[in-house]
Image 1 (cartoon, rainbow, N blue to C red):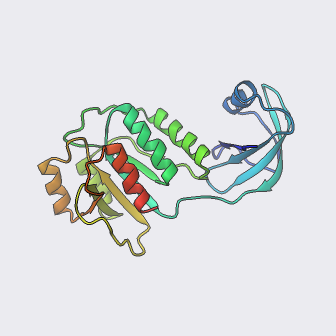
Image 2 (cartoon, helix red, strand yellow):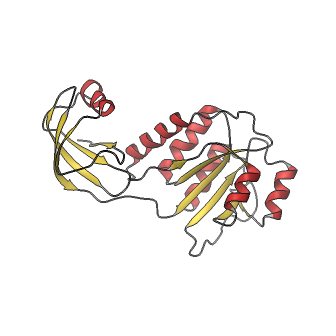
Image 3 (cartoon, helix red, strand yellow):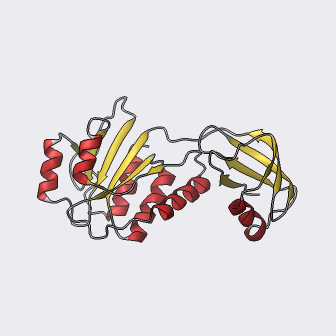
Length: 229
């Protein structure tokens, strides 16, 4: 039987024996999933614990949970920042969902010269990241920033990360050596402007090819991320 996983956040202490009173979780357990006494669930706090519990009692207002065992933590092997030029809402959501499953640690939506849609629903994005983490088995939740202009991104991150532009053509293999903090740039539909390409060049950022075919931006984000994770 498939075990359901739930992110509790740092405010709920995952003790050996405790009563849960979180309204959103209880609504989902009681009304949607219809959990019953004796069922097992996995809870993780996104930091240091992932634990298997048995539901000893449950009602619409509370659930009594008893620890069965601790479970191993599963986190990405590398710390990957994904910088992508904002797309239409559903494409942004697809990037966050699938790249969370791949193992991206930080999402930074970028406002570039060719960005058309500049609105970004942060609450929705965070919800998608949590649900993707619950589904795929990772025990951390990626961080998501509000949209930032490209020039500000370069100013802030070029001395902190190894930055790579991911595009069609160019070398497809880059040796990261011992670098475990890498930033990947995915451009907008139509590519980066000449001015933006000049900024990349002046910042000394290397380029990595993603094959011979033209990829949609959301596909490129997944392919690029998977190369380093």
